[in-house]
Amino acid sequence: MTKTKKLIIPLLIVIIVGAVLVLNKNYYKSKKALPTKKEAVELVVNKTIDGWGYQIYKQGILYINQKYIPAIPGKKAFASKEDAEKVGEIVKKKVINLEIPHISTQTLDSLKIKY
Image (cartoon, rainbow, N blue to C red):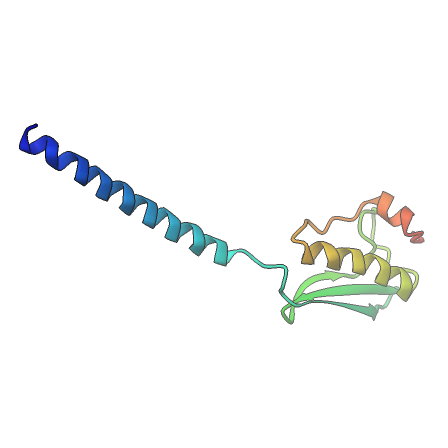
C-alpha cells in the first residue's frame, strides 16, 4: 500500500466520527427547543359581555383567548359557564398533549353545547 492509501482510512474514520458527533449535538439541541407536555397549562373561564368564554395560559402567558364558541359561524358566546368550561377543558388537554387545539361542531354536539 502506498503512503496515501494508508492515510485515507484513518482520515475517513475521523471525518465520520466527527460528523456523527456534530449531528448528535444538533439533534439534542433541537429537541430542547420543542415545547414539553410538562409546561404549566391553566384554564380560566370568565364572564364576557355576551355570555361566557375561556382563556388558556401556558406558563402564565395568555395562549388562547376564546370569547366565542369555536367552530360555528358568527360571534356567539357560550350560554353558560359550564359550557365554556367543558370546551375549555378539551382545548386544555389538546394543548398539554401538543395537539392542534381544534374544536369541531361534532365535539360541541357531543358535549351538548347550546349554539
